[in-house]
Picture 1 (cartoon, one colour):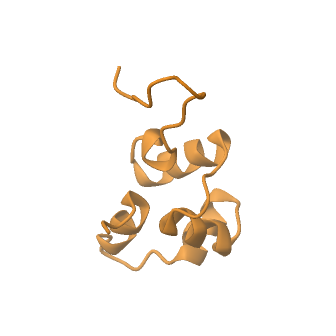
Picture 2 (cartoon, helix red, strand yellow; picture 1 turned 90 degrees about the horizontal axis):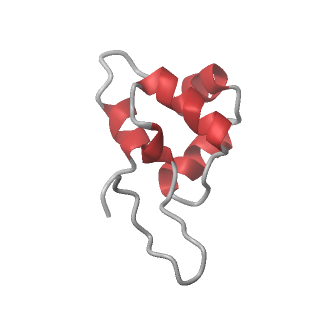
Picture 3 (cartoon, one colour; picture 1 turned 180 degrees about the horizontal axis):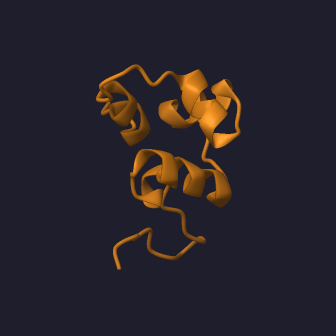
Length: 77
């Protein structure tokens, strides 16, 4: 299974960027960061926006493609 983009970003920083440091910067718990990286939890749009601001990653990297039943699951625009 490929790494979540958030984990890949942390792994490629020149100085260590721990889950705790990222959690503190985003105003969430360390366990939330761990859950996001594992794909066990999706952040709120506000938290996703904060993570995007911190990391420079597109906000869509933190949100799963979801659709109502019967609608396509396409995030391309």
